[in-house]
Length: 460
Image 1 (cartoon, one colour):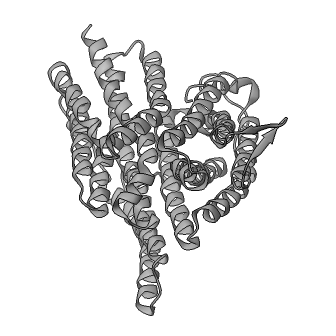
Image 2 (spheres, helix red, strand yellow):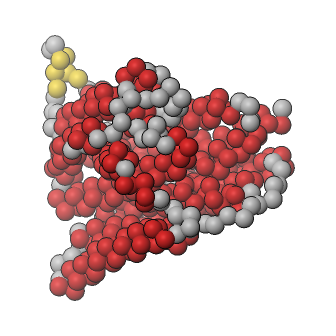
Image 3 (cartoon, helix red, strand yellow):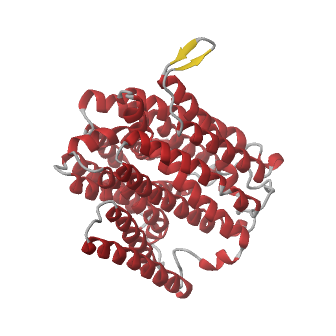
């Protein structure tokens, strides 16, 4: 009974984290309007979370070895709640971004910390428990837009953050009482490697943001210096990782052509898909004049399509292999992005006018199906090369996807800000991303094609 109560409480926090990720996208148009700020600066509210979560996910597994699972989970939850409070109280966009930084340190560590506790609490049924955990996490993607739309419409966008506070505190109390404190282990944490990689991403993304405002020679010099700094940090990161005892990213793995190809695919996938999904509500509101609630339906349609397709395709990887689902999914995603890049004004079907909410929801639903078809195959694509390195490969994959998503958000906001007109800007964004997705096709053929029975459907 105690283990079940721990399981339920853990997943209350995980569900909050998942809901927050999709609900913030629904609130994004209101946040931008509330602070009357540029899209480039407001975009950091979205990208900072993904950016910091990259390193948090990679590091928290090691941190939990040193501090213990209980302490790590409680610290992560506490940071998530604290960041939510600060975000709700933020009087300006800069403090909101800093609050999201705090929130993301906790939110990024919640998933790996939860998995560690589950493995310890359910040693005999850990596979079923982890499967249920991922299903609960995915449910947040479905209900998040609806909860977000309702909260923003009824109580304002700050209620998105206040929503996390009572439930987060409620979850921490029983976990503090029920979880046993285990002694930490001696383990090396590559903080330096994570710091160099973070410095690279931050300097590169700030450089992208600065591009939108560079007019004088001094501003262009600052922009050039930021890009030069990003190049320097990535060089230092590579040099450090090659010598580190326990590196954040084992660069030797990239000598394997399939592994390198898989992570180029993951980076582009993250940039186009995660970047796109963050701007669905703004697209719906700005281009089609939808309400906040209606924009949440569009986001929810994508989540439903993704979960249904991912659950189904995960079971057939052994028969299908990896390449067919990734190719089919990429083509579907590309076509949907190209469709969204077109302008629909009064679309008729068999003499009946189709409402824009229904039409755009249908397109994002199909796009979600494409994403769901491709995701399980791309998740497992290289695990068969080294099954004994599954944790390492999974961590690197997440790092590339999250980094791609953060950079994708930065580039999209730059385009929208530079173009000026949101309708024209979104047409450019979707048409270009639709084409870019097709660039992944050669990399798909460089990856393994067959799924071993032990890994098929393991990660959907």
